Length: 173
Image (cartoon, rainbow, N blue to C red; front, top):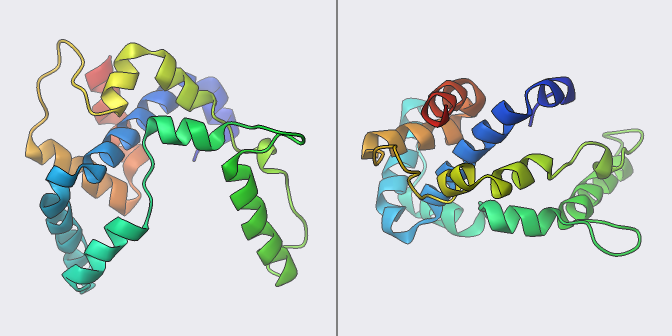
């Protein structure tokens, strides 16, 4: 999520930060990383003095879908007449619920603020696509577990744009 003006002025930066976020999603979604991810989650919440049972963290990983690049592209593809994506439909459902309950007074079409432009930029750039899907582009060293921990912490804490922007823009040139 970013301001439209910033995205229009800095499309490559937006795509690179999004690729970093997708890489964190890829790491989180790998079964081989499950225990490590659960450890990171527990440590993150403990740091913020929130105690969540490990079984609840495990359930969160199962029930909360984190979608990688290809799934995101599929979910954002607008089809039919009128052309709607799955995200448009879901956003409309939430918007209608909020409208019916007096939380908002009008709705804006998701097509006015949801775009797959930056996902397509990533998919069309072999280096960004490789990065977003967990591959190591040529010339970069294999990230360490510490790198994965930092990516996960950024993902969870919502400071992704601030932290990953500098790290991944530096890595990807």
